[in-house]
Amino acid sequence: MLDFEFYNPTRIVFGRNTIPRLADLVPQAARVLVLYGGESARKNGTLDEVKAALGDRDVAEFGGIEPNPTFETLMKAVEQVRREGRDFLLAVGGGSVIDGTKFVAAAVPFEGDPWSILETHGANVERALPLASVLTLPATGSEMNKGSVITRRATTSKLAFLSDHCFPQFSILDPTKTFTLPARQVANGVADAFTHVVEQYLTYPVGALVQDRFAESLLQTLIEIGPKAVAAPADYDLRANLMWTATLALNGLIGAGVPQDWATHMIGHELTAAHGIDHARTLAVVLPSLLRDRRAAKRGKLLQYAERVWGITDGTEDARINAAIARTEDFFHGLGIRTRLADYGLDAAAIDPLVAQLEAHGMTAIGEHGDITPTVSRRILEAAL
Ligand code: NZQ
Ligand code: ZN
Image 1 (spheres, rainbow, N blue to C red):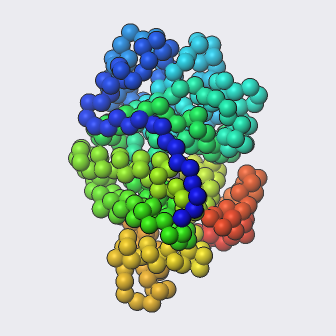
Image 2 (image 1 turned 135 degrees about the horizontal axis):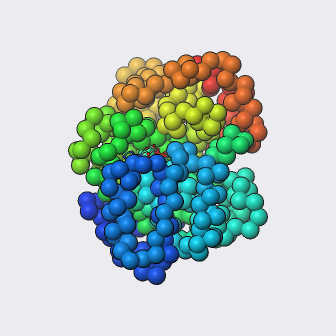
Image 3 (image 1 turned 180 degrees about the vertical axis):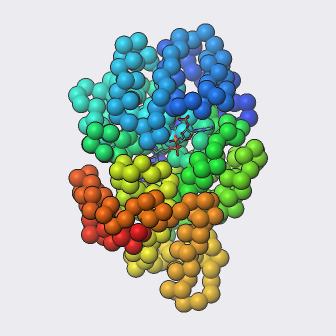
């Protein structure tokens, strides 16, 4: 096992009718800014419940945080917080709203150009406003981690930052709040969480027994419940299991003491930034192709994945690896997610600009061995056409 330090201060309040807990969890004297996305949180009543729970606190709103939240929009929230002297940020929404809120929390007290927070991937963040979340979309794990991914429209850049100052203080996870999600977003959430586990598990063996078995149980749970959760909008137990699995997939626990890949995400972020493809769908395109390309370096873990996650024990080692990757791709298809670039209207002409953007963003030595160079990324994208 590799050495590690594990820190996660986020309180999780999980279950039905948990939004009223805001009344105790948010400091009474807080000057709150509630941040949300488009209209979903208002339409399904979540926003009203949140405001009712906040009672007579001084509360303002900032709406309009878009999927793949942009620096341009979020800077308006930064101005509002500074102007009104807000001191507590409450995100109500999915990963985009929570990520955006983390950025606002870090940017408000930041001296200098706030975009540098992304350029340094959070290394220059020394403080942040307190933040918390009410989660409405199980997918990213942002509700219990210190990561955030922000897009700058002007330069077509989608970059991540991490900071210990940006963990939510608490997150409210009420599975009934996911009942209004469109099937497409539920499928996205399953595929995103699945890929988060794979990025931290399917690397090379380091004898981390419990991390491996924990990761395998999360993958098996997603395989068991994912397609059912997409098909059944109001099944509490399915949504509860999906919500907690997605949180555990990226709250730092399974990634402690193991090598991590994240190349699928880095390549996927360029696809979203350049072509607006949903985050999870970019992962479903890149991951199978990446696994095929990296099969030698990932051989030990691919065989373990084949056997323990998919129950594949027959055939040569190569046949088992092929079968496991094919099952992975079929799993995405079973969620209604296509896995080829062509399915999203892209052809070979798209690849040069994507590789150029990876280079521009410093993504030239990615993956668990740092050996996914632009040449390898190109090969992975070409094989995904
Ligand atoms: O904007 P509204 O109207 O609220 O609609 C949203 C949005 O259109 C809708 N939605 C959310 N909850 C709903 C709902 N619709 C009906 N009922 C509900 N209960 O869903 C749409 C997508 O929301 P979004 O927040 O964009 O989705 P997701 O949670 O998948 O977040 C994706 C973002 O997270 C980043 C991605 O890059 C992407 O920008 N990620 C963040 C990570 C992290 N912080 O650790 C890790 C991930 O790998 C990922 O990169
Ligand atoms: Zn993701």
